[in-house]
Amino acid sequence: MSPGLVFVLLCALASVTAAEDRPRCPRGFLEHGSSCYWFSNIEGSFAEASSYCQFFGSHLARITSEDEDDYLRSRANEEKGSIGYWLGATDLIKEGEFMWEGGVPLNYTNWAPGEPNNEMHPEQSGHCLMLQMTTGYKWNDNDCIKKTKFICERKVSMCCCKH
Ligand SMILES: [Ca+2]
Ligand SMILES: [Ca+2]
Image (cartoon, rainbow, N blue to C red; front, side, top):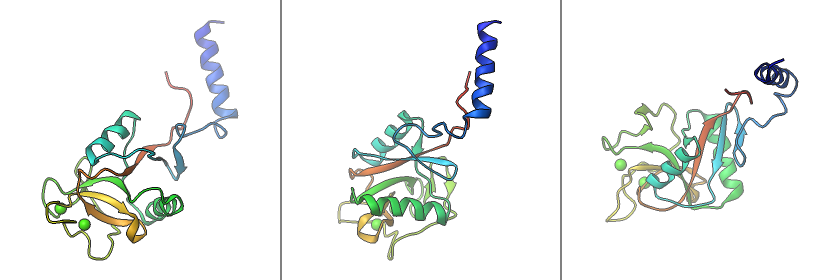
């Protein structure tokens, strides 16, 4: 039997016997629904945070449902490890029109009262989306150069065998 065939058979066997037991998210990522999430242990600007997520084969988290929002806010409230967490949306292209990365409109939102207000301080502008601790991690538009923690997201991997 050729080594290649053995590999294919082992992969097929693994997929029927052990797929459920195998980690479907990379180490350090939390699984919820069809996504894996990483709550960063480092801080960065919005641009830095986006780059870190890409390095890990992911993107800044996109919250598209109440369930996802509840999950991420409850995790953030449990940890209380940061004044905020960057998510992957901005209104940099057109003021007041927030979009997820790739130009996808926000169909679900959970802005804190009074947000988005486009400013935090006189010399800052709110163009990047953050879960903000002071409002129980509801949504706030904050200054993109502010350094804070962030949440990366990627789809779960369905199977171990990739060629
Ligand atoms: Ca803005
Ligand atoms: Ca704001």
